[in-house]
Image (cartoon, rainbow, N blue to C red; front, side, top):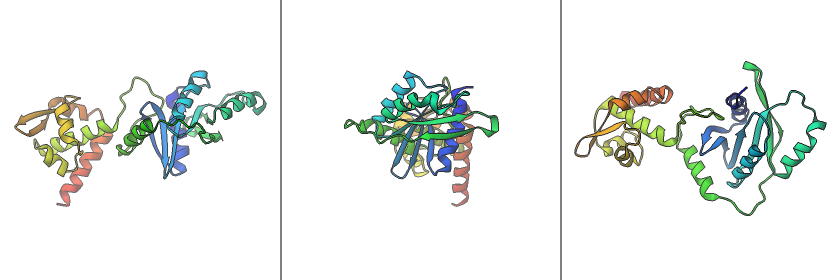
Length: 235
């Protein structure tokens, strides 16, 4: 059993409750947002001091924080009473995940208490919310390591690359008019992934590396290509 397997049941639990769920957001395994509610979930196979430390760190954003772990095989309330007391003292919520293949499910053991500390890291919270709001569709899985994470920035690059791939080289202004990011010029000039090239003064195109790069993100490439085709049909 891996931490990656914990994510789908927990994701499903919160989506059923109407939350927008995202994975791997600014070092958080999972976030869930609904109206003014902001939840962070840290996923680990087992309870540990490290997991509790992560949970306490996330609380500084002002979020309600859960720790989600695999449900112990020999679970009984009596055996875990002292552990529950510690988690409640730390104002953390607890989720147990039962891994049963297609029938895996997550259950909330108890909710987190409101974070009572006066200190809150509003900057970090703002960064997390900006990242969440900058994503269109979720393709990440929480609890993974050594895997490419699709950030809001990556998604903007994919959108721009799809525009250039479909319509050819053009100006940053024209790309923005076609739905590209507000910071399109900065993205093109920075060229972090090596996907873009200046073909003329003020004109940018997609490189061979860019076309290959799109193949690494098939879901987002299809999403933005379909969106562009739809817009093309309506003009």
